[in-house]
Length: 395
Image (cartoon, rainbow, N blue to C red; front, side):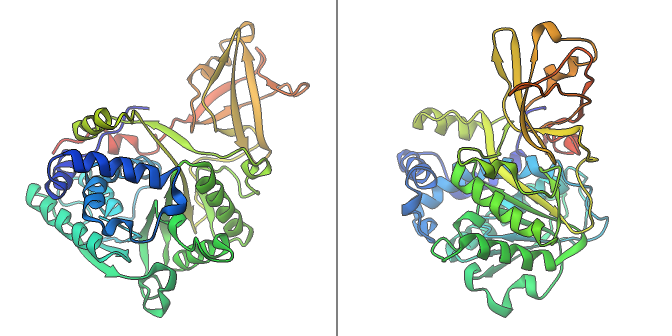
């Protein structure tokens, strides 16, 4: 997969709001990183009301999350050829909206004219930042017909009848790194999150797409797997991606398993500068995600010999192994170097997230074996459904 890059105007618009990187930004990135990982119990609902943390988020986490969103948008089916209604739920500074700008701008200056973006969030300051970033971006691309942007100040846990998704239909709904922060104090957070997604699906156009992106942490990812299971059990939607089935998630069968992505990208210089100061290495995008549809459409044809690679390649002396997943469950398969053949040579190109075909697996041991006679192929490389749309974009 070609490393993904975020459009330069978007980076400049975020920089215009966050200003230059300084000691306060570096400290804010450190604080937020701890809150998002080892100190999640201290993560409150209004952590971005702090101006210093807001600057850190705009200059560091927003571009990273934007790139994750772009990586997933690269997989979705082509959008309907009409003015779109897009909902960015739990928007923060509008990461989902900025991803849609990048996506649409790759189609040309007049692409999807008349499109409307609605950002819903409980944080007044972040919505104000989103509007400011959008104005800055519009001033940098005068030749592009910018979608109109609207904001809604809303407690997403108690939205009530005035919730936008109860009043109108949307073609794209984006929930980027926000579902895991909702209903954390509820008796059954999974049920409440699933109910919210059910409501969102009801407002989704028949040919629309609902995208949920979450941190790649074990807890948040397993919670997303559980939400997914509740939705598919009720038949509320089809999993377009990443899953190749609507069975119970096999990653939930063992408490140490979870399924996440790790995709290459080209970090902006701003991110590289902060990484050096903080001591991070942000050379890959790590996240978990779920793309839902109501029309039955899926990212690839399904079958017992079609799998998604759900691990990195594990190389040992004389052998390579990967974990695969499909309707038959998760399974560890390996190919001994002496079993390499022209028919199974495509195994060398398998990487986490790829959709692959394997005609036969020798299952006589604890590790499935790929023999010389097996045919291996790559059905869909990582993020390749529409990847040419989202390659490095210069404006």
